[in-house]
Image (cartoon, rainbow, N blue to C red; front, side, top):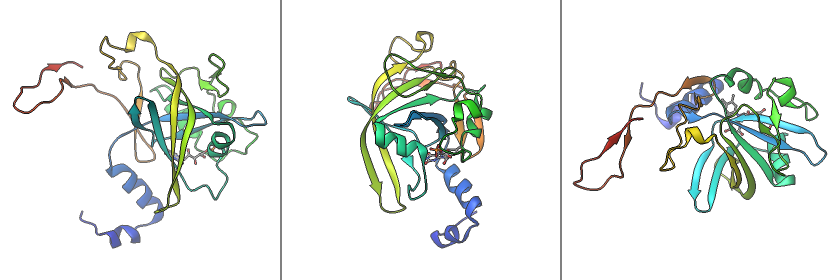
Length: 211
Ligand SMILES: Cc1cc2nc3c(=O)[nH]c(=O)nc-3n(C[C@H](O)[C@H](O)[C@H](O)COP(=O)(O)O)c2cc1C
């Protein structure tokens, strides 16, 4: 298969979305939890969550164009708080269902059978069964003019992960935590750890550890 930019533009809309989203590789499956100013809880699935930096600890994700109602976006902008929760192998069917367009007053926690939990005094709800739970405050909301999407950048202010999954050097064993991954918009995977490598330097043989 060899496609030019023109060929890609001519693809059927849903096919193109699935195809282009998939070719960049496997992504993390995250549920973003928010609460509106009026107290409505919201949960939605996102596959574009990405590491921005560790110091300060920053996470980004891409928000689709906001000219239509987007509850996650509205709640993040109005409250400044949101949670990012790792989807596990046991959750992906219910997590996928949260991507349906539920009305603003409907909590996807209830509608999709995902238990919520509040941690410390953080105002946005977390997913109780997610091994990795991250509380973020909004730092930047950056327009991407090329396609009217937005890069939402948050700073981690609360993080919960069971100590049994965190190695002495800070590596998080997501496979042991049964974290799921996504291809495109609908393909879910379990993780299969293969190797860890030492810091790469020219002319120096890598050390390997497993996983
Ligand atoms: C696998 C998958 C990944 C998704 N990733 C994103 C994403 O990265 N960014 C986004 O804006 N929407 C993404 N969506 C769409 C949202 O889940 C969907 O628009 C949802 O209805 C938003 O809910 P809300 O209006 O309550 O925020 C994804 C959907 C699926 C099925």
